[in-house]
Image (cartoon, rainbow, N blue to C red; front, side, top):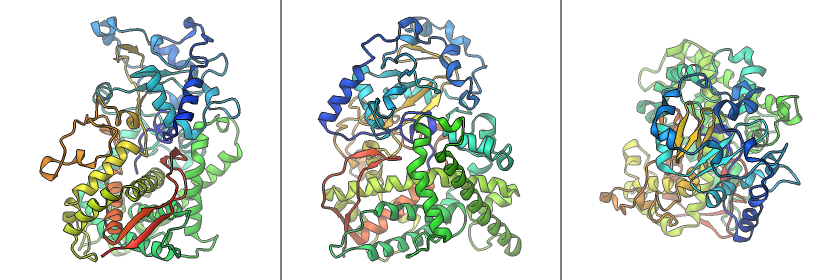
Amino acid sequence: MKSNMRALSVSLWRNSLGVSQTFACGATKSTEITQQLTFATQSGAVPQGNVRENSSAATAAATANHPEMVCPHLANGGDAVHETSEWQNALPYNEIPGPKPIPILGNTWRMMPIIGQYTISDVAKISSLLHERYGRIVRFSGLIGRPDLLFIYDADEIEKCYRNEGATPFRPSMPSLVKYKGEIRKDFFEDIGGVVGVHGEPWRQFRSRVQKPVLQLSTIRRYLKPLEVVTNDFLERCEQLLDENSELPEDFDNEIHKWSLECIGRVALDTRLGCLEPNLSPDSEPQQIIDAAKYALRNVATLELKAPYWRYFPTPLWTRYVKNMNFFVEVCMKYIGNATERLKQQGPSRDSEPSLLEKVILAENNEKVATIMALDLILVGIDTISMAVCSILYQLATRPAEQQKVRNELKRVLPDAETELSIQRLDQMHYLKAFIKEVFRMYSTVIGNGRTLQEDTVICGYRIPKGVQAVFPTLVTGQMEEFVSDSATFKPERWLKSSQGGTGDHLHPFASLPYGYGARMCLGRRFADLEMQILLAKLLRNYKLEYNHKPLDYAVTFMYAPDGPLRFKMTKVE
């Protein structure tokens, strides 16, 4: 549920348009990549005078044929900053360090098959290496069909960017979804684009219509019991999947995706989708939903990060993508139609809080608004929540001491393993929440956030033109000693208050922001937190989790997560 920038993964492709995420490789491979980065950087293949310097030149070539990539604020003011001493004393844009592009192919060649240096799964690694080689600000230019990416590895400068972004921050995201909403299915979306892939006033208007019911604490509380039921069903299925060694199957990550889908369906569509049922037939709706979600999970990154031929003609991948999107729209329309019919016949619930869907339908009297809200929640929730859970479970299974601390806390809060959860009990699970935050700091599923700058500004002592896409690599800044003390140590206690056993470590508030910040902060973050907390509380209060196989590296398959089979051993505890 978190739609933060993902063009450095599918984190940075949704927000910053184009590179991707990954880090977790050995010293040999890191050395090799570092050596490769020097090629073209020191060659002087592109004369210094050819480097784009002013704001119009910096964005014109990349956006001329793709107006969806243009910040709508580019025509607005910004000249006042040029009169300041800070601007006049700053260095020009073209002096920002970074890998030099080569003629024709620019820096795009680095991600190409055969001749390229990296694959999609290398992007988080690239982000880290760029910082090591070039410092706290890096310009990644020469990306065919895309504006420059400006990587900022300074939490103070990131904070300044966020705090000065205005009421309608511009975050280019998911060009494939922009094309689908704005061209392929313009007949359906019309002028109601939603919150993903939409900017400016249309984004602000839609978000203001759905933000209140989505973020209301009363709405969140209403879903505690329903999501607990879904999670109990999931844990029962896990028990059925255990082999003779009490281990879960190699494709256990698919089961987590099913749980995530079932949770999102319960929240966004007011229904149980049936994804956790055993022995689903291939043509059943739940299985089709699972297949469509799996396809999106595995292939949308390719659309976003590789050469965008689909923009010019319908490639097989694009055709399948459109078919998948149409299927999700149909599913949303079906269940929202059912909810509307129930409201007409039964009226809103009188003895409990109305559901999210009921609130939106009653407030807007427009099924399309509810459909688009549900679609956006599903699109940005399937991958982020499920992959985050994969990462958190792997860290728990490989950190027995910390897992035991979580369990000890759960036993204090839930003396009886069968005790039902409540908001009050969740509020007492301080260490569990701190563990989640520490996983996000060191292994953030979404490895970066970002913004398209709406005004000329000075960052790290350089003149930055409006229209440049700034990337905030939270996976790197969250592990920099200058912003997080003892940053290389996994220490959940750093997130606790002193009265809760906290260590009082220095932690810059803008060093690790997995949900983003400000007006475009993840709309579904409270639901995401609730779902993860319920799952971890129910799982770890009743089971011990172990991982007894070869350690897994982290890579970007779609998000940044453990790359390999999650064959956890799951045993019952008292």
